[in-house]
Image (cartoon, rainbow, N blue to C red):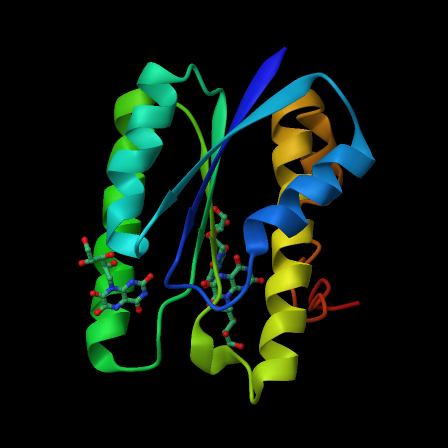
Length: 155
Ligand code: RDL
Ligand code: RDL
Ligand code: RDL
């Protein structure tokens, strides 16, 4: 039984974690979730570390929403750097599912983007855990999460 850690925030304006867990449950079995909600993205790295070390997680999904202001973009950079550090310390993946609030033009598009990106990264997590060759089949294919795939160049 694999343990999938789920870290999310109360700052985000969409419940991406529930969308991802729904997608994983529709995709397969053989895992349980440990969910840990923190106030904001800068609280994610230590939450992920706690999930790995105290809750035996095999992989963590980290959901966050950086706001549109410069201070938020700096927060996102800091959070990502912390997420990288925890991955290297633990030798385990943290799939960072961030949706910047200003990627979308309005609330409708924002909620759609959050849902799509969360579900598409949930499949990446499933494959990383259970079927690593699956991502190699899509190497170089210009895949994106949320907005449409770009596709390969020169085709
Ligand atoms: O540790 C408490 C807070 O500092 C922490 O939760 C921060 O991540 C909160 N936060 C900011 O302070 C900020 O300036 C967040 C953002 N911007 C942001 O854009 N998105 C967040 N948190 O999730
Ligand atoms: O952990 C899951 C993702 O966060 C991770 O795969 C990122 O590297 C994906 N990504 C971005 O989130 C982004 O904003 C990528 C780019 N930009 C990019 O320019 N090139 C990438 N990934 O390969
Ligand atoms: O359209 C320009 C950018 O918004 C886009 O190229 C990506 O950088 C968007 N993006 C993020 O900003 C991010 O934090 C993506 C991811 N995460 C991601 O995980 N997957 C994406 N884009 O396809």
